[in-house]
Image (cartoon, rainbow, N blue to C red):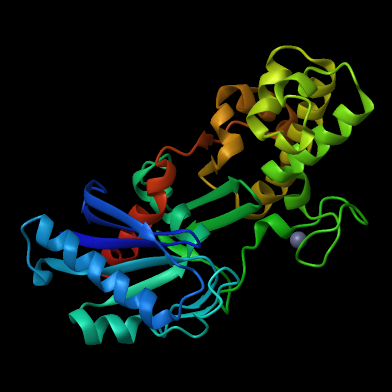
Length: 319
Ligand SMILES: [Zn+2]
């Protein structure tokens, strides 16, 4: 079985042909041109699939369907993208109807964080344990996706599981969503960098200054990790606070869902065991009952391909 997966992002449209074992046969990325009207973006998506199918020596009929991950809210029943702040001219974009008209292929879509969680759970770090798995992405924000019985769970009206917007500190840092103290403001890469900038300002001798060449606006998450690994006291303390808040948020998630697997993705997760080891220790007192024996935290393995592989999974689960 071959399915097409598309990761429609604000910067690029990435498409891939994926087989039933989650292997990418062929993939291609083109710029989105995010300010364009949805009809133009749709035309490019159709062309991408046609190109991939031809290059692979296949016919359109060999493709079971098209899955799409989008950076916004969706109506999966109608196959429509409702709203994406990065794609201003794609409001109420009727992807399913357009794909049916253009290539006579069924189309399924979902939010990109949910789709990545599906891909990682089925073919990535989750290793197919999809009775209940949760993926948390630590990037610009904190994204969340929940898989229950092999399918994306997003609440009654498909707008739920905004896990990054659980409040972990009442009256805390202001969040883009309008609330204060959201987990995202502390545990995103953005939150890590904000803390490190403050710490560097208070500590003129910190290694953080040297790593960013004396310009704190250039500080990134990797520099903070590198400074902490080198034993810089300011960076060590920033990283300890960061992991503590990460543990509080993950404890909340675990206590709600009790997932078989908890997958961490995004830039900060690249720290791997250096992140997981202190995290497991700080997580133990946050877990209801304190029993860590069933807590299985893993680092995502599909990287930037999670989107297209997860999108293809949306088609596979309908077969
Ligand atoms: Zn928020």
